[in-house]
Image (tube, rainbow over all chains, first blue to last red; front, side, top):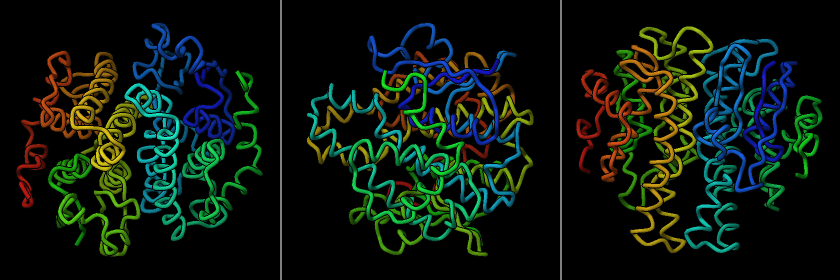
Length: 214
Length: 214
């Protein structure tokens, strides 16, 4: 059976959960607790699967081991193209991928758990960590909202769900969790609302996972 | 004419330069000086093209405006598949994309100019910035080296150039620029050497760009 190693609150794992649900694919969800005992992602056993010591990791029974949520999304799209999470035309697909990377490369990595832990170790207090988090969230969302201004319909790119929505929704979840005021982001809020009405997104929510609250 | 807005030392722009060269594609290189006058990427004119206020941006004469180096690489691959920078088989392509994201999402964003500027603004001194830079470089390269251990040949994935090499070489350039000891990374050093023998990579080097040294 295919497995998804993740953590209920990891927004990168959340992306893959949405994509699996949206494409109707099964995977055994294996929880990796990112905080308990210093973080289960740092055990030798997990490190052998994922040398980055991050979640998610996706495995298939033939031995395939894939790290990196965006690489996993692309793989699910390549191997199960219907329903699609990328537009057909190369220029449109490219715009969706820019949206994806605006979150996955520019925003999310800066606010990841390991980064906040490193900042604390280097002397940041709680308020400085909050300021840092908020700064990158707002910077990233402003860029994302500008892309939506040119491209959004009911969803991030026109009226079809794409990888961009799959990356946006977990990021909005993070923003709410850290009490960030999203009122300036009209498109982001509207699209998040549309997505959360879809069962693929709703079932992937952190609070719906077996390890929620742990 | 297609245009690539970049900066000689930007490793994200460097990736796109390699891909354009490798695929034999022309683009007018438009320099955006990331430091002069507080950074030309923050002008209203550039921000209208790239709301993230980052380089690179790739444009085509029909009005296409693409941000995010990885989205641009994927677009060049989609529209000019030969010579390819992704393996044919989905599982192999997925592994290359994991390598790409290990650099583009996990490593590079943490050491970007704007991040170092923010750390300084929040009180980090030069030594702390260096420690930060080195920490994430080594963390990222250790994960990347582990992926190479399973997959490398002459290049990152087997014996063909891929997006993984295109992301690795600019990162190695950064590491050398910051005097980071790479001796533990046997595969990374070996593959970087092979790539730099290829004219597509050599011509894309920062020092070969018209704005070099500016």
